[in-house]
Length: 527
Image (cartoon, rainbow, N blue to C red; front, top):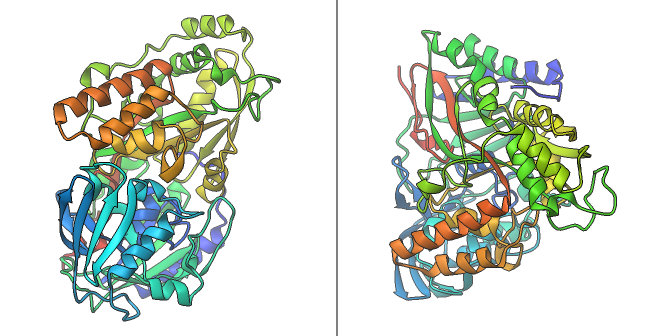
């Protein structure tokens, strides 16, 4: 992995020394290339953010060891009418401050999640209202029939109404505007771990919740989560025993870690597609040498960019074969995937040059590209490779690679022309990509992560129909049609399906989910 941000040695050294000092048999020290940007579970819909806060806060419905739906704060649920779902809530659950969990907290969390600043609107956008039956039963009314509603709830966390009101945190932390509140740095969930200490961008410490309502299968009393942005420093910390778990393992270091007799690697396919997005809305493209027009509004330019990218070269040299080139915005493991659409446009520089000339850009143009350098596996190197590929068709890329702390606020404001992003279909269903990524931006979180504002009325229409369709064969046919339209439009540039690479000490057992979540309650340290 290549990163533009240089880490000062002092903070990392201090952090490693601290976690080494307090480590014990019941302490697990985890290092990641990035940090959760906030403790607010509604502030950023991003995998690392969700996996960290998901150990402190809980949803109504979760996923078990096998990634199947399982009860969490709701004990059961059923449709009582085409647009009504009855959820029975778990009794005897308390937030970490001792406040009982009730239906009021679910209704409050719904209102909070659909409001300004929320980054999780897509999880509640199908809801019309929530009716309280009693303290432990609610009816969720959807705008239209929506058979996969429980699947959508697995990353929607419930907060305490009382705590948020007491701490002036009734609105989500708004990453776009840099607005913080108490929920940024403190947490009060119902989950198996409590936040004990928070040092943003350095280290956070969590302790086991002794009054947790459920079963904690693992034996970890304390989790120390540390950001170590530099790859070599993070690998060295694992090899030396200063940390116990690291994620991700840079692909170039997998063999080295595997060869260590004290360590082990966990690898598997991730439900994430890495892709490039393009501003297709503005009349004049920002951060470009082209004045008075937007080249990305021309499908020939979008197609030229696609065909100029040597995806097999990126797979081999950047990803060390730890990726599968993708032609769709969903991987094969997701419901609705159409195998017949799985072939990419051919890599063809001469064809790309011809398309650029036909579109009126025979000499290319200059363009800024936004890229994170601490979120995806080898993200910085991927962007560098894309920039080098595009230079062959005359496109000069001014690469702006940065930590996600500054990257996300920028792109979520749509203050970008060309960007790299990844999306995990956490519901394991194509609707989870069609609604937030491929649909035109609108109300209820529709198109919330369609940051280039790609828009096709037929895709929008099909997405609405797909949401309500219960016949799987008909649903799959509609998904295929929507994906084919998007593919022909070259609405985004899919790159590859990412592989998961985690490493730990040999005596540690844990569950690796295809959504890249790491539930700490399953981690077991063997003597």
